[in-house]
Image (tube, rainbow, N blue to C red; front, side, top):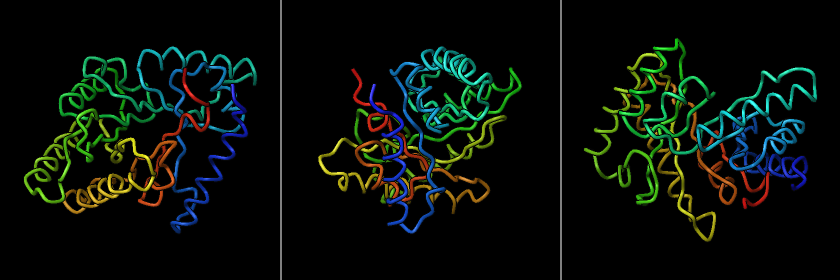
Length: 249
């Protein structure tokens, strides 16, 4: 296991420096430590270093890990840390919505009306609300999930259709849209990811114009290799795993 405390300090410093260059306060950006595939012990080390937001990819793995992490924290400190915030950052199949609803601080990967409807139905059944981000595929990569929005800037019909879908989701009971998420292509240079991040920010701004009642406060974009560019383009959440926990096996 790498020195997680040192790695976290380095990532936080890089975030602060990126914010300074963008004339933004570091408090604007939430670091989500992506702990998928890493053991609860690694997460406990990050918690000891002050990290509170963690991202997981799979619902089943996350729910088991959350329970184990809470037990570890309780064993070490004598109390469960109520400040921990768990984020679901991986693709969520609609058939898994029942298990995910109400279990995460924020679901970053809502990418269809069907999934949003199922989350709403489950939330109503158990009496909870669910905060979500809408995953948007603005890069056009076939391998990426998300609402298909490549080229939306030059396609009025595409934007109009998305606005209608967002309005539908916003009207669902017990669902709260907090912003947008995207994944940039894997590129050789971080700057090559900038158009993807700029497109998501512009899409958020266009939605604010069309649906001013929605807060849309968050842009979840940027990972280990490109998060500084994402911050320059307005990211409010960066999802970083490898730079904190090391390479996955």
